Length: 393
Image 1 (cartoon, rainbow, N blue to C red):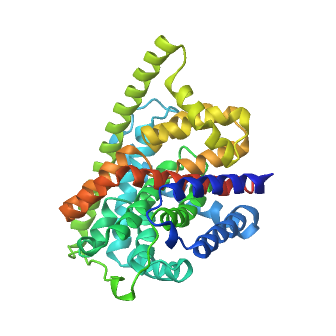
Image 2 (image 1 turned 45 degrees about the vertical axis):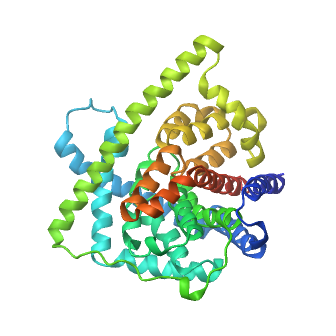
């Protein structure tokens, strides 16, 4: 049965992506099948073997330890503001992002992350047949996140064709940054977060290959990565602290606005239609959740969470998911958890197009034109990843 739902989920994605494809004749079916096969192998290795389970567990413990270390700074500055034994989302999930930003800054400064990202990207390009730049970007955006990752290719962005631009933007919206992974692990099971990060790299490239297929000349494959100006070590630490704190404040502000707005819409719908807005959109997304492998009896609830992520953001969806997950099956929890781990929502489209526009106004304007197709592609990538985890549950 799981194999059947794997087929229905993948065919759903392929069917929708095929309908909006820019050039159906250039779709590389062998390349797509290879990446799907790699995802299946990775899911089995990570979730069904001792080595994979140990590795995922170790990664989860590593991030838990990082969050505990971050808590030392939080307690020193904010200790006593929360009653003993009580927790708040701001302190537990958001403030640790400041420490994570510092850690990433240090790893970048000593050239560890650039080395790993570059050669993983080159290895990935050999497997997927995509350009070296696209493969580099798919890996780097899973570590650095956006908009920061665009700063590593500022010289290349103005020179990219519109098709290549779509591919890197899809990767940017389908991935999460390493800093965000720790925050997500406070709301979802760490093993699903780790699995989603890996699967999303391939899912984004699969969808881009269907919606946006193209042949790439070797001379077009610009791979020189931007070297940022080296600053003194402690200045870098200070900059990283401020960058991390800005992310915390932005996410907190968005949550305040979006959650309150969602509550307002729910109240209005319940008053007029006697049904909450989330339940209504849950019915719309229920068939998609079912085709991904969610049991039909839970499809409306799962669909509501999936739609919430698309309309608002993944944090709002994860918080809502935490309130209902105890009533859901393990399979539904796994599928929805993996689906939620990406930046595929309306707000992120604005961030991506704004980031590109700050580098090249012409390219930024083009990204704005294909914004809806970009959001569709990133959402379909999340559907593929969620469908894959359902295979082994």
